[in-house]
Length: 106
Image (cartoon, rainbow, N blue to C red; front, side):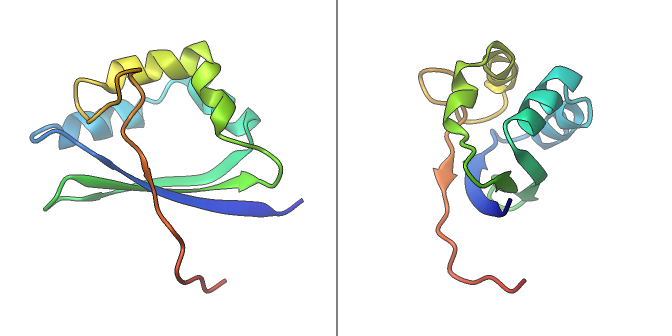
């Protein structure tokens, strides 16, 4: 089965860079398992320190979708634990802006 690449950006609140890193260094095992079960692999998040923009990129197994993650209790708890350090939507999910791929070199 092939993988699809997905990229997106999010935004941190000023002064929260180290806390964001600390929380991700201690990512919950049940959240990590949920993401893997959802078909997510090779997941990285980068930080532009000048703009506090987070850039996420991941691969997801073809035929899988990120849409159902928002229904999962552990995902919603994670979002709730992160909303004090980043921009979020009214439902607690991070403001995540999809990015269009314009170049790829395998």
